[in-house]
Image (cartoon, rainbow, N blue to C red; front, side, top):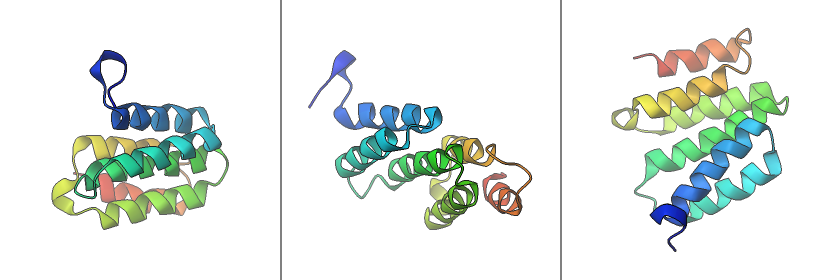
Length: 114
């Protein structure tokens, strides 16, 4: 399915995921994340991870900070190091910015430092 400005649906759902996650609308974010995950083939592991990092951000914004930080750290651990790029690290930093003084913050930041 091609949407507005020639965007494929997976790109729209990915963008929706980011917007809703950062707005704190966990329900809408989860729906967009589910749809994006269904549209990305398994070979697109980095993009699938980015969408799951949006889930971690939504958790943090809704007060589930340790869960969000842990999810982000686990996602980075599961993504092969050669697929870590600046965009993945930037999304992980957005999750970490939710609460800098928690111990899990330092653990996550160790994974995103270049």
